[in-house]
Length: 191
Image (cartoon, rainbow, N blue to C red):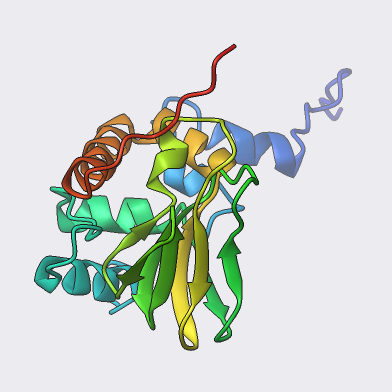
C-alpha cells in the first residue's frame, strides 16, 4: 500500500551546515582572525593618527617618521596599546631590561642618558634601542606631565613581524634612523 523507506533520512547538524557554508571560500584576513587585538576603524580619528601628525611636524631627533601609508598606520595601531600615564611616573629605569617601544601621543617626557637630559615631545619614540639589544638599558625616562602613549610590547612586535612584515621592516628602519640622528649606538649584549 504505502511505500515507506527502510533507511532513515540523513540529518546534518546545524554546526556542520555552518561549517559547510565556508567550504571553498577564502579564509578571512589575519586581522579578522585575531580576536585579542583591538580593531582600528579606517574612518575614525584615533590616537595613532594624532601621533603621526605630531611626528611629521616634530623637529626632535627622536621623532618617529616611518614611510607608512594610512593603511600601514591602521595596521600598526592594531598592535599597540594606548596608555595614560600620570605626571612624574618613571617609564624606563636604568639597569632594567625593557623590550617595549613607546610612542608619545600627548604630553612630554624627560630622558636622561649619561647625565644628559633630553625632552621627548609628542611624535617621538622611546625605547628604540630595545629593538637591537637585550641588554639592560641605561636610560632614565620620566613623564613631565600627564601623557598619552602607544605601547608596542615585544610579543605584539613579534605578531607584527609575522603578520605585517613590510610594516615591521619600516618600523625597524625608522627606529634606526632615530638612533642615527641622535648620535647613539645601542650597547649590544656579549654572549
